[in-house]
Structures are given as structure tokens and as C-alpha cells.
Image 1 (cartoon, rainbow, N blue to C red):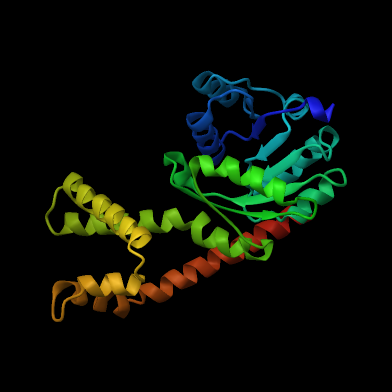
Image 2 (image 1 turned 180 degrees about the horizontal axis):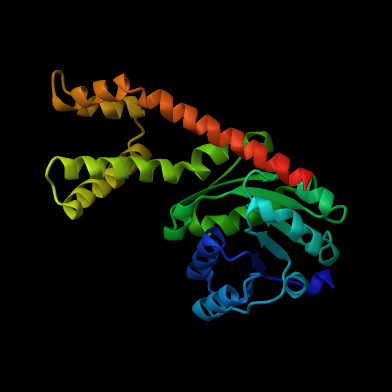
Amino acid sequence: MSEARQGLAIIGGGKIGEALLSGLIRRSGADGIVVCERSPERAAELSTRYGIPALGLVEAAARARVLLLAVKPQDIGALLGQLASAVDPGHLVVSVAAGVPTSTLEEALPAGVPVVRVMPNTPALVDEGMSVLSAGAHAGESHLDEAEALLAAVGRVRRVPETQQDAVTALSGSGPAYFFYLVEAMIDAGILLGLPRTLAADLIVQTALGAAVMLRDSGEHPVQLREAVTSPGGTTIAAIRELERHGVRAALIAAIEAAHDRSVELGRDARDR
């Protein structure tokens, strides 16, 4: 039976699930992809929008060889309980549930099922995601290659030992929110200084985009790029002084540490459920 299975089932139709679904369909079409979503209304919406079947969990597992679990960590225990009788070592289970270790999934599934843990982020919605994956005990290079090919449809992919995944979650998984927060504050500053909101937003969004491309493509360290903008006695150094005076660097580091600790806690909660 496992030899007859092919294709991909995306289980969970939230933001990340839909981001991966839409990216995969843009890259290679909808053939062989099914979606599984517990809300009938959401399942129907995704089915209509992308032209793919919406199936129940057991039927999806029977049809698809690769199962991408795109559910919240709080929901992973209940999902695994329903999935356990429907999977076998012929499947590949790819989980994007934040903080949930591969060992938790492996303990709930039949022996030998290969599991790959992935931490994506929301820029996958625009094919600029950063996805980081780690192999479970039964996943080999071929499984990692297959998972990487899936995630490459929506951005860049890196591989790390699973012990680094909580740090990855705090850095790139939650990272877009930190940038949005900073941009929001900069737009507010522009309004405070008398600029219309739309103009302030245009200025900051394009500046953020340009700065990101420079960081990616120049090969220079962020310090070098910052110093190139920072003239002696100029406006930028005055701004940097205020950022340092208010402890922005320390606050950001503390925030990322807090995100890391929460990722660890989510994984612990998932094991205890």
C-alpha cells in the first residue's frame, strides 16, 4: 500500500500551512497536493482557492506519502493521536510545529517513521522565507533532501542539529515580528516629525528592503554597513547614541532569549500532553 502513495498532504490550513501550499503550487502546480483542515469552512476555502482536494486526516494519509504537519504546538498531541494508526515507515512526516522535538512525534507514531522538524517563517508567503530543518532518529539524507526541496519553493533552507532549533525559532521563526515592530516605530516617528503616514511607510519599507539586500549581497559585516552611513558629528550617530542610551541592543537580545525560552517551554508542554 505504501508504494501506491505519492504526493503531499498539508495538514493544517493556517498562515504557514497556506504559505507553503501557495508557494508549492506556484512553483510546480497543484498535482498531487491535498489539504487537511479541521474547520470545514476553511477546508472548503483552501480547496476552492487552490483547486486541490480537501480530505479527512486518515484519507489524506492514505493518499499522500509526505505529510506536512502545519498545526500549532498546542494541537500537535491530539493530531498525532489521530494520525498514529494511519502512518507507517513508508511515510515522511515533516513538522513545522514550533518547539516540538522530533522525539515527541516519534514516540507518538509507529516505530521507524521518518520525521523532519522544520522552523519556517511567514515571509514564505512572498517566497522569501527562511526555513531551517533537522532530522529525527529515522530520517536520512534522502528525507532531508526531500524536505529541503519542499521548503525551497518558498525561500531559503538551512540544516542544523536539532539542539539548535529553539534558537532558530527565536531568531528567524519569530524574527519577522521584530522587524515589523521596528518598522512600525519608525513610521510613527515619521508621523511625529510631520510626514503623512503613507509617505513615512513608503520611505521606511523601501529603506528596509534596500538594507536587507545590502546585508545579503554585499558580503560586508553589519557593523561596516552601519559605519558607512554614520558620519562624524552627523545625524546618524546622534540617533545611534539614543538607541544605545535607551538600551535597544540589550532589549533586543533579551527579547530573543525570551522567545528561545518559550520555544523550549512549548516543546516541554507538547511532550507532557
